Length: 205
Image 1 (cartoon, rainbow, N blue to C red):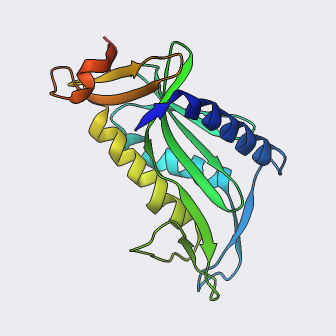
Image 2 (image 1 turned 135 degrees about the vertical axis):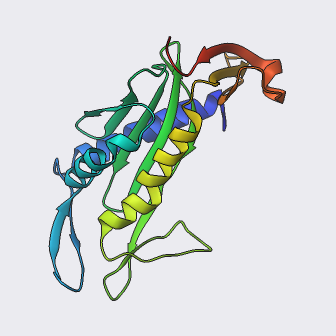
C-alpha cells in the first residue's frame, strides 16, 4: 500500500497514541480463555507470542529475531535486509500486526497487515469483529491471535522473503507527495518502476 506524506504524520501519531495506551497498562495483558475442559484459564500475550515463536521458529525461511519493548514486539530476520520488520501490538480490544518498511531512517510503508478486533460471544467464545463474511469463533484468545494474525503473517513472509525478490522503494515529491514499498523480482513489470528510487536485495549477500 502506498502512503501519502501527510498520512505518515497521522500514522506516526496513531502509533504513538497506541504505544502510550498499551504502555500505561500492566506490562503483561491478561485475559480469561474459556474451554470445556478448563472453564477459566488465564493466559498472557507474552506467553502466547513466546510459545508461538518457539514452536514455529523452524517454519520461517529466515530465523526471526524477536525484541520485546515496553509496548510491542519487533521482529527482524537473520540474513534479510534490515529495512523490513514485523511489529506487533496488543490492547484489550485489538491486535495490530504490521510488516513495516523503513528507508533512510524514515517510516516508508506498511506492506502487510493482519489486524484483529477482539470480541466475545455471550457463550464465551472469541472472534474477530473485523471479519465481515467469515466470522469464526475460538475457545480462547490465543487460538484467535494465531489463526488471524500470526500464522497468516508467517505465510506471507515465507512467500515474499526469498532470494529472487527485491525491496522496491518508490515515491514521488517526498516533501509532500507519497511513499510506497513493494517486494517484487528485480525485473518485474510494474507501474511503480516509474517512481522507483532504490532496489534492495531481500536476502543479504
